[in-house]
Length: 305
Picture (cartoon, rainbow, N blue to C red):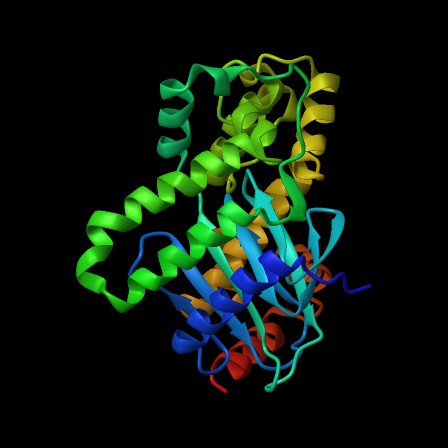
């Protein structure tokens, strides 16, 4: 069900949409000159797309979207805000989209150094409940955050001011996230000693060492947790088990190697740690709904339209 925005939010969201359409004249992913800010447009519903979300805040400006993030489904629409506090795999499909009413969204990738500096500078932000938090959350965007993104995108028209002003607005957005509905997730995952922070460190380790066989008991020891506690918290933060997470890291990297470096399926499978190409092909098809060669051909056709 489409829930209309409150009048003040609607006005700011409309302003943001008009600004984005200046730079998004067709289906595209636009990496802006502003660090870590990307804009997205889709003119038609496309086959489910898969990606690995980095820690980010994303706002739907027009249209609606279904996302399977990890193993949990999210539905969000214009005026909704998604925060991912850790790297998570996602499968997305856009709904309510046409060339006359394209899907529009933006993403600002979060800066861990800014978050840690803010927590250090404002001690009240470090008061964290002891329980862990999910690594993803969807909620209505707050007026202050939406207004800050309007000011940030307005800077694209005056590139000479980006270096001086964009970092200030980006820091403001991080601060607003920390004191808003997302604050507990961000503070917990970015504060040393919390269980969520231990899981975040494990995720970072897996991102580097995904090619090698992993022993979950050793991961639990690195996180200073009992095995059952580690399993429970890892799945709570990512919605996946450690082995499921590693598998998706491998498959997404294999896909990147085939798309960006023209690896064959055999080369990509071996490069990411698979010993059996048959197993690689089977698991790839299960995730991307097509064998490697067919999937890569389909993705390239979509990109080259």
